[in-house]
Image (tube, rainbow, N blue to C red; front, side, top):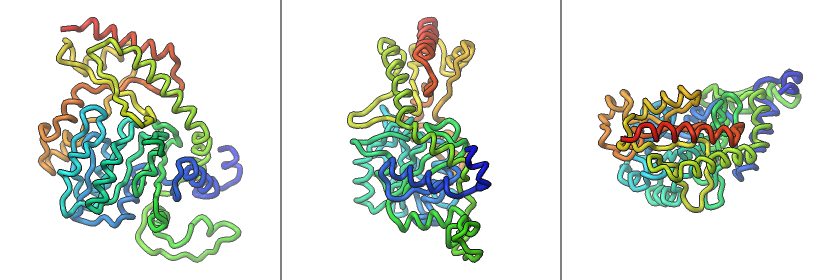
Length: 366
C-alpha cells in the first residue's frame, strides 16, 4: 500500500489488474473484474445478462438486502424462495416452484460460506434456460465437490467488505465464465467507456475515448487492490484459522441439546465466514434477544444473520409476503445467533464463548 501511495497512481491501475489476474488464477476462473463492492458486482452481473423491466430473478429470502435490491434496480422482480432446514441455503425444490416464463436468472447465496446444492441448481438452470449468478460474498475460499465456489455458475460475485473472509475495506469481484460477459462488465463498471480508462493517463494510452453505454462508477482503487493482493495470499491460512474455531465450537456444543450447530454437507468445504447456531427457545426461559443481551454482558459480541427479506417492511408491503410463506426461514430466524469467528481468535477465546453459552443455557432451562 505504501508503494501505491509513493507511485502516485491511486485509482484503478496496475495493482487492480494484478489483483484481478491473481484472483482469477487462484479460483480457476477465466475472467475477474474488480469493483468497489459486492453490491456493484451483483448489479453488473445482472446488467451483463440483459435483465430488463418486468423480468424475474429467483433469490433466497435468507440473505442480506443487496441480493434482492439489485434486481429492483432494473424494475425487475426478486422472487423469494425459502431455505433448506439444515444448511439455510436456498432450497432447489422451492426454486423450481418459483420459476415462471418471466424468470431470467437464479442467485444462490452460499450462506455463511457453505456452498449451495449447485448440482441441482445448475440442472434447473439448464432445463429452464436460466443464468446462474453465485452470490459468493461469504464463500471465499469454499469448495463444492472439489471445485472452487465462484466457478460453478455463469457469473459470481465476491465481497471484500470489512467483515468478510478477505478484506479491502470496501470492494468486490465479478467472475465471468464468458469473455462477452467480462467485456460488458468491465466497460459498464467505469461509465460505459470503450477502453480501459486508466490507460488514458499512461505512456501507451490516448486522450481519446468513447462512451458506448451509460455505465456506472464501480471501479476499485489501487489502494484497495494492494490490500487485496496481500489478503489473497493469506486466504487459505485465514480459512484454516476459522475452521479450527468452528471445530472447537462443534466439540464444545456437542452435548448441548439446546444448541443446533451449523450443518456441513458431504463433499463441500465451507469458508466458515459465519458460525450461526440455533437456540431451542422452546426449551428455555429466555428468547433470542435475552440470550444476546446476556452474551453482551459477558463482553461477547454476537449478531443475527439474517432477518429474512420477507420479514422486512418493503417486501411485505410490495409483494405481500407473509411469515408463513417461508416456514423454514421464519422458524430459523427466531432462533439464529452468530457467534464470533475470525482468524485472530485463539482457542482460549473460543472456549470462553462456549463457557458463556453453556452457562446461559444451563441457567435458563424451562
